[in-house]
Image 1 (cartoon, rainbow, N blue to C red):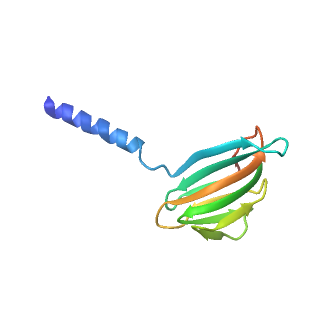
Image 2: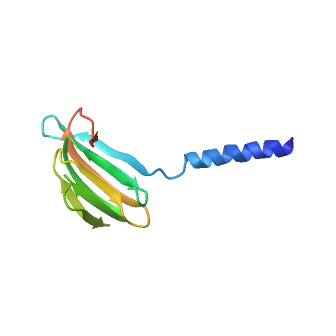
Length: 128
């Protein structure tokens, strides 16, 4: 009986550890605040992307400034040629432009994304 209890405990603890494992894409909201532009706000988030993972095509209801904190990210804007950025580099993404980001490095990649967006709209708009 003790063996069965030990196995059940091991499975339970293993499941808890898996629940806390690194997600392919993690977004951490940092700030959301009104600005002096009527109907707009600033939103800042940290986005962590596991190696080889693609954040698929999407857009935003306003401008984005993406600053790479660590790793190497490849961005594609409106189906154009890829732009590869490393830590310390940034990219401006105009309002409504469909884009994707992929971690092309061997470790985790992180970006600080700052948005000036229309208030009350979804921050991320998925597209095909």
